[in-house]
Structure formats: C-alpha cells, structure tokens
Image (cartoon, rainbow, N blue to C red; front, top):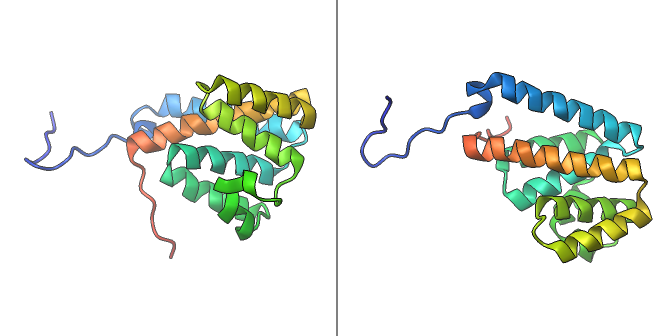
Length: 160
C-alpha cells in the first residue's frame, strides 16, 4: 500500500486510467450524444457553451480548459465566453442558446425544482423535443466528465 509522506496529501488516482473500460464507455456515450446533438440541429458552438456553463458551475478547471479551446475552434467569440457566467444579463445569446443554457443549469442542479420547471418551460418554447433531449444529454455527459476530472485532479498545463 502506497502511503503519502507525513504532512503531504495522497496523489489522486486518475480514474480514467485506473478503469479504462468504464472511461471508454463514457467516451462512447459522449460521441453518441454529440451525434444526437448534431442530428437535432444543435451547432457545435451551442454544445460547447453548454459544456462550458456546466463546467463553470461544477468548477472543473480541466474541462473548462478543454472546452474553451473547443469553443474557440468552433467559432465562438472571446466576448461571449467571457460573459458566459452572466449570460442572463446580456443580449449576446439567442433565445435558443438561452433556453439551452437554462436547461443545462437545471440539469446540473436538479434539486431546484422551480428553476428546473422554469427552464423546461422555456426550453419547450425555444427548442424541439430532439433538441431538449440532446441538451439534457450534453449536460449529463459533461457533468460525468467533470466528476472524473475533478476527483482525479487532472492538471491544466500552461499553453506553450
């Protein structure tokens, strides 16, 4: 049994490496969710906004790093990324994006039943049933990846 030196914290296990079959199943789920989102007509920037907003709520530095880069590659602007935590207070996001972001937040914090009902009602007005399903699945999947990275303490390396 590996024990940490006195006074030091134990090194975290990278659970994605420790249990690769389980992690691979999560990656396959993510690929299926990404395809469902595309089939539902959700563009990549919206999917990345959902990934980022959920990762912000969960405080997952690694996923924020990965999905900020993905959002920029997909054409997202730094202005919108910078104000994403306050998306409700801007006019920078479309009704579809606003509905998706509210639904993603409600999926991430499901204990708030009033916010969840409000988000779902707004989603029904702005999104198709396929899009609602896809947004919820995107949020569920990134929540799972957030937990893998947070509990593993995946490091964020400085860009070179």
